[in-house]
Length: 226
Image (cartoon, rainbow, N blue to C red; front, top):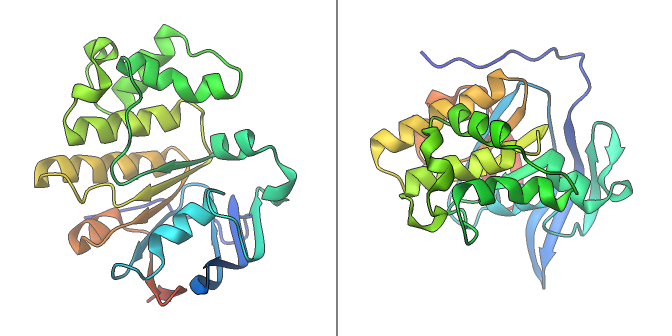
């Protein structure tokens, strides 16, 4: 049976969006959304294509400029934080993650390097083990991996910055059932370690397996599913 950490309702949100909107030209892609996540909480967003799901993720990751509203991390406005620090703390994992040229170990080092830090060999091997990959993968060419392996490397790459929030955009949509179930278990493990996790998916079985709070995105608006 699926489970997820139960958050303290009195605790302050790790990430919070207050009445945020995003416009592309004359198209209102996200319309006055308010949303928050606490440490250890999983939230799942469902909705049809074009409903605003991916725009919500990218807005929360500060990858899309807001037309209106405020985004906060730990109670601090995102606009008051250096973009590199915000994006290290709020990790966005794309539906089809792009692997940088070079080895898996070099990919894992990319995030810390952007923040002026180095990733030691021991830490790289620990990250691979956390996402269920053999330590021998460190030397593999990242672009030669399978879809499921790339997803795991992308998660390990995000974890290298020790993020407080993980945002997943359709993490299982391009995977076979076994690989998809493995990613679902990995996502739940990330929340069990105290990270706030938001997952966009259209696969209802995976939405149920992830547990946590469920939301529906439609017409750029977000509503909680009871």
